Length: 90
Image (tube, rainbow, N blue to C red; front, side, top):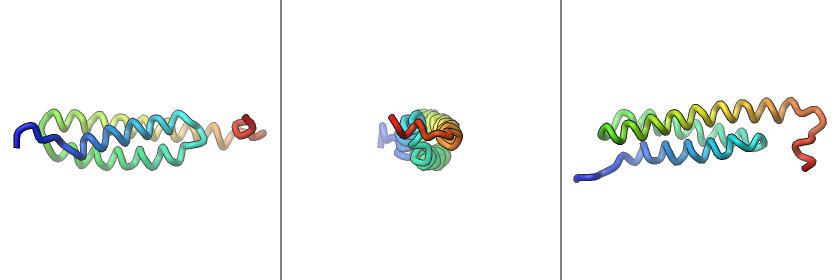
């Protein structure tokens, strides 16, 4: 089947992008962790399969997943160190 893609790699990239998006919102840090973890898992599985193009895509998913983890940690630090609760007051 010519042109068949690596679904795990594509899933990893999409989940990584969504994880980074949620990671940019400090209150959504736990959701970012969820998507980041899934992106990393699918990225690792996608690296084992497919062509070079699929492996590159899976690597991007891994990188985005790791970035989402970092943003999630930063978001948790921001939320947990807000003594007044000003994040939630608007």
